[in-house]
Length: 219
Image (cartoon, rainbow, N blue to C red; front, side, top):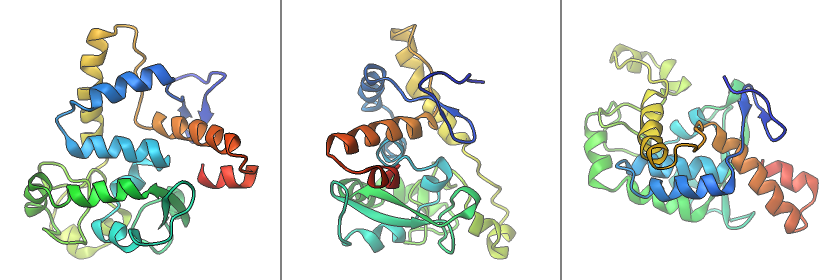
């Protein structure tokens, strides 16, 4: 278990921002990662600071519904999560995350790929906008959404409950060659991308003279 340090952030667990040099190394190796879905997931987490369960439960129609909306905060579009949406959030509280529009286009392009369609064909929702963007090669989501867990038809399909195991495996795939070449490279968790985002976005907001309220809204 990670111990708090001077740069750590408490968020239900102790999160540590990834240092710039280490992040640059991780990004370099990420380019060669075998999973396009994981590459996009990593980018999404780093660019939005969203929780793993939130990112994992975003569906195609959620992105399509906001892709043409007005942009704010450096060409980002607003996505409502939690509450009455089918996107999970901590304690199901309703709030917004802000996604770079360019990333939204990457996500939609990915869902048109042969890889995504092959995964979707074996999934509960099939090739449809109701399906999760992030699916494993077995057709299961990275995390099963709370809305699906409450759906009797979904439960009757006996698909099991996904709780992020694939993400942890894919992160290990990323870290293994890095550590082989950089023995002192600090291991990090996907959760640490939240802390990295928070520190980076806050610093960026300060440089652009955003006030504290504007900076905190993004974080």
